[in-house]
Image 1 (spheres, rainbow, N blue to C red):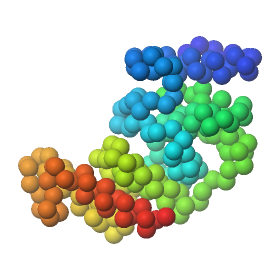
Image 2 (image 1 turned 90 degrees about the vertical axis):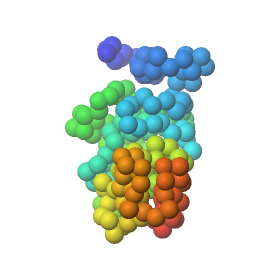
Image 3 (image 1 turned 120 degrees about the horizontal axis):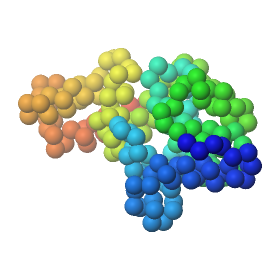
Length: 209
């Protein structure tokens, strides 16, 4: 990686250039230059969602950083760029945006804390953190974005009693894929199981919000 320029005006260009290099293989990004908006699967196992439309949900997730054992560090990078796109100009956000994958927890923590202070954000305690985690992944399920991946996050994070239907659908999907039938959940197939998961996810999200 190139050295970070000392001049602050040049710093934004450096961040943009660095990120463009990461995504240089994507023809769409090259074509229109809108380099932070695209829904490409830039990191294995997770897709970027529509910018800004879910910024509040993403911010809640980021504020849960210290109280979650399961946390996707790459979302800190995404969050910082969505803040820039929203029009925030704090230097701390530019610094946060300069991090590239893989992101180390201890390296990024002081920069993340500085953004929290600059934006007067208060980190969530455990109960709110758990709620924010679930809402973030349920929102993606409801939008049909990486449903299986986000379902696995919900199941790994929660007890069976919290989301019993989603638990059963998770194992039903695996069984359907392996043997073509399942005893975990009635009236589901590979053709309709994703819709069933979205329905149950929507019910759970309404309960949480």
